[in-house]
Amino acid sequence: MSKSTLHNVYFTPRRSQIRTVALLNNQKSKTMSTANFTTTLLVNQTPEAAFNAINNPRGWWSEAIEGDTDQLGDEFVYQYKDIHYSKLKIVEWVPNKKVVWLVLDNFFKFTVDKSEWKGTKIIFDISQSGNQTLIRFTHEGLVPQYECYEVCQDAWTRYIADSLRSLIATGTGQPNSKEDKQDYRISITVDATAQDAFDSINNVSQWWTENLEGHSHKLNDEFTVRFDDVHVSTQKLIELIPAKKVVWLVTASNLNFVSNRGEWTGTKISFDISSQDGKTQITFTHYGLVPGIECYGACSGAWGPYIKESLRNLVLTTKSIDSATPVF
Image (tube, rainbow, N blue to C red; front, side, top):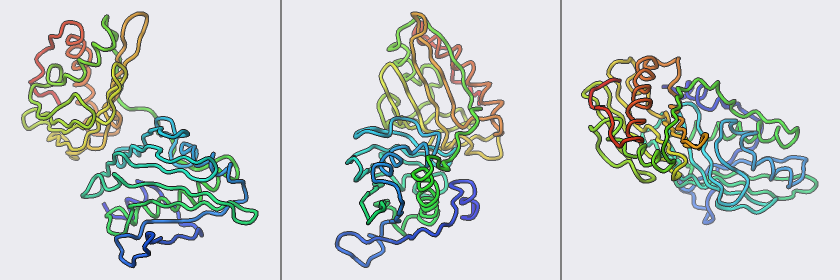
């Protein structure tokens, strides 16, 4: 995929008159390796207005952000289609002065190192400048050596110069819109506890396939499933809330029956567990498995029996149907 194509489908960045510079580290080293991406924004509103807007990334970055974003220690997830996934944590939060996000996990579909942002920090410094407010944005760790540097710096420039500025000034930004919810979803209700459901979901080899390599019980565990040469995919546990939620990120996939064999890569598979009239409801969603992709018919048709029959049976009796036969 060309960089121009990435600009269109990934961030849709727009050029702005905002001043963009590469700010060197505290030692002011001249080496490229320390040139973190930095840009500044000057607005007429108060530092408090700027601070409040920064803490509302749904209003200027993406409407699809999941999680809380306005307190120290909050964690949230940003995702753009199957192209970019990022999990972030607020590690510094000084009212009207500073906000710092740490990137806990990251996935890019378009780079060799899929986790390039992981471990970097996204910093907003707020200060008074005469009668105006100055916001200095720094993505610490986003340096020219990164494969995503050009795309990411252009994207951040657009989000800060246009969308965040607009949110601060008018109350309305231009975030990525929340896409139509056509992701494959199915729910089942079982006469069992939420913990039973949680434990069964994590016992993947007993309800999806015995042909599993790796681990599937702890946060950041990774496992690969194989259905002969028909379907191979690797999943990473990126969210795990006991008796409430399990989320996998598909980090690699190979489906031999579609033109784009990596259709699942970058999608998320989620299990939400809740109480329903004294029973337990499991809502399964495969985010990114939408009618527009080639495997939708076969894959949605396969998930149905796995969830409604195999997983349900495992939760109720700890005995699942034979899931070793390739279906996908």
